[in-house]
Amino acid sequence: MPFIPLPFVVALLLLILLTVVLRRDGGSSQNFPLLALIILSIWQSVLSGLRWGYDIRTMMFLAPVGAAIVPPLAYAGVVQLVRGSRRFKTWQFGLHAIPALTVVLFLLASRDLIDVLLVGEFVGYALAILLLMRPGADALRLAPFEGAAPAYRAILFTAFSLLLSAAVDTFVFLDLIWTHGEYARPVIAISNLFLLTILSVAAASTGSPSEPVVVVSPPPQVDVAEDAGTMAAIDALMRARRVYRDVDLNLDRLARKAGIPARQISVAINRATGKNVSQYVNEQRIAEACQLLAETERSVTEIMFDVGFQTKSNFNREFKRVTEMTPLQWRERASSIAI
Image (cartoon, rainbow, N blue to C red; front, side, top):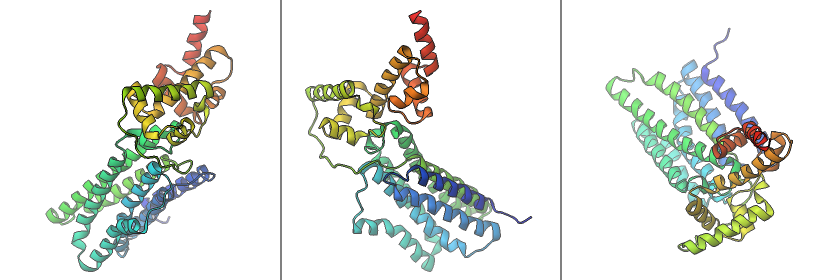
């Protein structure tokens, strides 16, 4: 029976993941940097299989170049989710290409410096991603509110994965100095597969922006009166027009419907409720779901779709967060009270 290296199996699984993502986002604006990240992870897994499974040493010259491309792709994907599909300028492409080009030069001149470069690159891009996500889930202005929290967690997971990769590279570098690489081979093989997998899953979990971003300038310092006015306008939209039923509703779309800058809405809701915008909108959805569960005999799934949720897992998670019950428990309690 022919030997099939584990990295090849991982590459096949990542290929299946890529197919699922392409089918899921086929009708919407795709996040090409994150798709490219999954494709690159497949390529790196294949290289790892050839290097450690069949001892093809020439692969060791290609793998560092691919590794240097991973952080810029992850960062570009997060930027697209935060700022929209606005294209990078030529100088920005050049800036993000510097690490990969430097690795190529080091391969020709001094391989010993590659590990140091990759550690610095992974740490730098991880910190840049965390800086983008300082506002929390509200930073994802183009992500539908239902998926904003999972996407936010996936992005944080991506950033910490880059930091973990930097830690592994540091360990390998020190191992080569102290033990001449006694533990380097298994650590590199296992950690690379693990990191490529979690990066790909995180990239797939973030989804893609639903529409182009409308750039709005930051509002001036918001006072209590302005907060109250903003909240009144948003509450009116929720009650009168039930905009939360829009499954693609995101912060930018809500800002356009209200005629209020997205940043002002985020600040007002956070100050008034202590929650981010996605939590606030999902609570409006759950409130109507509770009413429908108590007053109608409609199925939980039908109600879930009617109030703006698309997946049962998100609906159940948010329902339990708000009510500390499952939908069926809520219906049973409402029925017992009515009797």
